[in-house]
Length: 379
Image 1 (tube, helix red, strand yellow):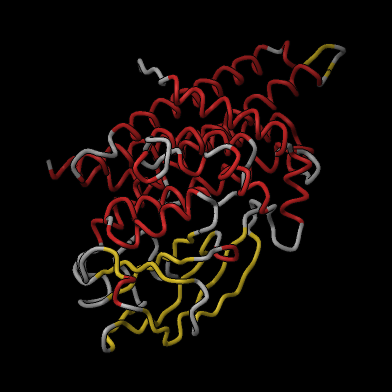
Image 2 (tube, rainbow, N blue to C red):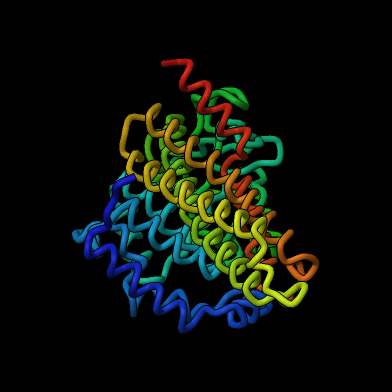
């Protein structure tokens, strides 16, 4: 695939790469995730105020750098290389993406706060029964005077322990899985009636189970039209899916690099195992999977602005490829390392955990293969 980044995009990558190399090595990350809060807030402030990275995907009129989906992909890939736990995906890609799509007073007020690093948004959309069906919702938002009353349960809400705002999907009409009747709300995370149970995830992030118990929310919390929010939700989830594909390419690159270095250091029969032809073939196969996944991710990123069916097909094709690649690269990295590959002390095992989580985040390989097939057959 013939593709060249602009000078500005290269500058974003180089600046962020140098910053993360200085502040986000494996030992530093281990300290972050072991702390009570699970992160270092100073990193987020630096990304916002020193580097301007939180504004990379926003227009210059909004105070950003004038970028979009490609800039998000660049940032996510760099975060993937250091196993970054910063809530960029939830805040900038998902929350910022929703605000850019609908505009209005909330966008005017909150986007500058995102760029400044003052606002963190968590996306509360998944429910235990929902699987990957974004319309399968039991959470309800019922009209109450000028506003709504929100009730329900959202599971595995990443970054919720740190969030100032929650982006919540809820049913304002229709049946449990109907496409009509789905609405999207952006609310203050500290409203009365919001109950959180926080916990660490296997890959070092923090998440929450969130329960909404008669939470009163104002009418202006609604993003887009009442009951017509599903297309917007699908749009931002597709953007998030491509963003985690970009993160995966960074993770897989480090898995390949770390495994290649290990084969050059580990000796058997008096020679480095990198001399063994079977392992040379394996390193090449891993490299090819990473590069193919990167190409599919770039293609999917470039197609995010197309009509819904074309966008969804490109996203599903990319996610299916990336999921398979993450599985192949991760498993071969662990097999080559042997037992030490899954120890807490070695970084490679942590990259493997993140690659494994990405395989199912926003849809498994099987889910996206099915979605791609349905779109193709409908054409």
